[in-house]
Length: 143
Image (cartoon, rainbow, N blue to C red):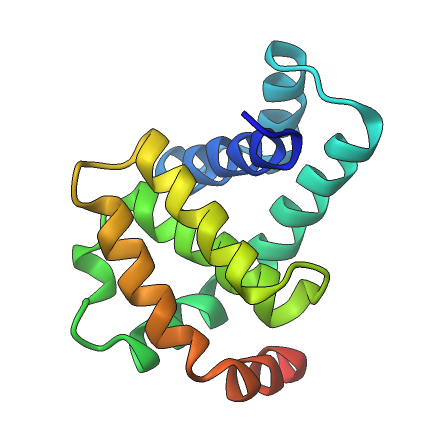
């Protein structure tokens, strides 16, 4: 697994646990880092994802619902929902990850952690969202 993919994977694990069990994010992040140590720069990238996504979760979910209405958010598996949030945050807020890279990385995470249909689903949703990248960026900057 590529280093940044490992960092995203760890961020996904933390966000999933916080989403499902409502555990304190800092504690979960610390525990995951102890289990899966990362180089300092990768740990920092992981931290940016986690603590970038968490305060914007509601806004990210609204955007997913708005631009991909054929997939009701409450029917999206928690793991897929968090993969979408990470990718959307990366190209909507972080701006250091090209949109195609964010989508490819999300599909890779879906292959690792999601159901058999998850990669296609994640790719489809993010493709819809990518078509509205400018509006999404403007919306998230206001948040």
